[in-house]
Amino acid sequence: MTTPQAMTGIRVLDFSWFGAAPIGTKWLADHGAEVIRVESHERLDSLRVLGSGHFRDYTPDLNGSGFFNDFNSSKCGITLNLNRPEGIEIAKRLVAISDVVIDSFTRRAMRKWGLYYDGLVGIKPDIIVINASQQGHTGPHADYLGFGYNLQALAGINHLTGY
Image (cartoon, rainbow, N blue to C red; front, side, top):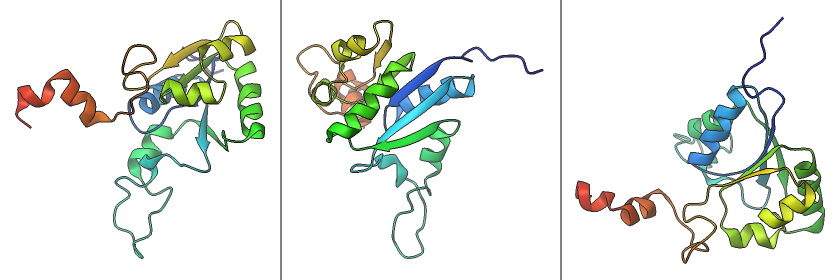
């Protein structure tokens, strides 16, 4: 008999991409959570091609990135087109059977799909929602896109380190 892990019985719907949030959801999966990673067929996670090494024919391999494969192992995955009603409907059905939703999109994207906090609790009142976008979902910069180097500059790291 296997001893249950800390997150056994928890289902996480993962709309995150690229960096910190996928690492966090991997940790949840590694501790027993069922993590369902949602990726857009129209716009795959750009981490899929980062660091994927030397391509024989200079064509990126969508499963060749060690970063992507490491950050997303232990997870289930589904591709949905969230710009189509059918894709949004499937996402909402997954919300209804999940315990946690995590995203790293701007609030503008999640609102467009009806997957912002108010929409999510309308589907499942006890859902736990984690927004991991760089600029947050409130405040004057909530609709700004950002990446690691943007946050480094905003936090003053570049000034402190000189680069």
